[in-house]
Image (spheres, rainbow over the protein chains, first blue to last red):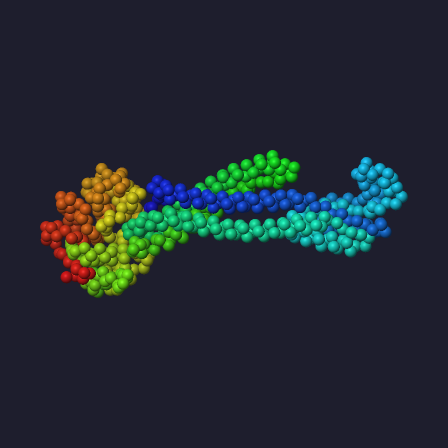
Amino acid sequence: MINAWSHLRRSVRFQPLVQLTTFTVLVASFLVLIIAVTFQQNFASVLTHWGRQVKVDVYMQDSATDVQTAAVKSKIESSRLFANIHYFTKDQAAARFKDRMGKYLPGLLDDLGADNPLPASFELEATKGVVSQRAYEHLLAFARALKKQAGVDDVSYGQGWVENYASALHAFSVSVVVLMFVLLIGAAFVVGNAVGNSVTQRRDEIEIMELFGATRSMIIRPYIFEGFAMGFAAAATALIFAHGLYSYEYKVMSQSLSFWNFQSSMRFLSAARIFLALLSGAFLGGLSAYLWARKVATGWAAAEAK
Amino acid sequence: MIEFSHAYKVYSGTTSPIHALKDINLRIEKGEFVFLTGPSGAGKTTLFKLLSAYDRPTSGKICVSGFDVNQMTSQQIPYFRRHLGVVYQDFRLLRQRTVFENVALPLEIRRERSRYIKARVEEVLEQVSLFHKRNEYPNQLSGGEQQRASIARALIHHPNVLLADEPTGNLDPELAREIVAIFDKINAQGTTVFIATHDHELVKSRSRRTIELKDGAIV
């Protein structure tokens, strides 16, 4: 039997340059993909971190009755969109305002108790934050519905910021899908060609095997194994490089941008994704080798070479 | 054993088609020893390529060892090739394999046991006086040694038919005689031997059937 390990050993020993070139191209392709996935994962994580900080304020009319206030509270609670619900009466709102601003405007606030312009309000924190377009649309719909509720004067959720943030999140998600697709196609093409080049350079080997009666599967199998092994090794090497780059970036983020606390949201690929990357690398290498070897090993490779 | 019936091989040339073989009709019986002679470009190599299913005829019928070369499916071709022992003019040795590994190739393809492969390869390498070079690579051998390794590989699996294209072309006369002696021995064991050569001295020294080709046709 044609030993796949011997075949691999011979390839590395006798075609070190071809193998090294192929391996380098594979590592570079996988590295680009892994960096893209890691970036996508972490950027989404940072956006999620920001999205969790969205707060909603529901301002009540001065004329709102206790029944109307209770109905608003009940509606908020039943929506299950919010984790922390705080109600502040007009007096509590005035007291908070005085507490925060009193030292800057002492005289002006003395008469606030007699003619208090601050409304009673609910302060809400979104349970899961606004971490997706869907969550944003939910929040928007709820705010509109709440605004129509009797006794409610206005609903504020930092509209401008949240809208921009939601648009950015949506654009980012779409861009990442497109980018990943383009990168994947590009990487598959580059990997396929690199492995194909390596197979074609050993066409004479395939011809001789055919001329001495090796079947197509006998010839192709060692090439598939070689492509599989090379794809796996390249993916593993790319993961090591990517982890090195990630660690460096993490250090930079921790030192230079610590006030944004990005590092708390940053993660390298999970074990499942690492496994998937290794498997994809091996699969891509093996598949490319299969397609190219199959193209050469027609049974008449020697005659077709002329 | 070998039969050509109105076989033609035409290659597409740059200006007009090249008729490499024209209306070849011949029959070689089992156990025969036949020389194929003719000047360079007469079509000897083309005829051998068709015989070994290295290439396909343009038209006509070729039967070897019970296989109809034209009618064979792509799945049958490897099994047909295993019945042959072929010595190519350009040796066709795998440069990444040692002499031992090259000679063992047909047996590996037949999935023979490694113990048998070792014993058989050593036996054949002794026959062609290459045992001491068994661990060397083709690029470490002289032209004659590469030819002998190629012959050893062709003999290793006791083929029904042994085809040799200019097997003594790169050898000195003494070594050429030794090689032909090996072919005689193989033939004596019942293997059909068909040798293409333009070495007239060699052909004259043996009283064997000779087929002569000229401009792609048998004369």
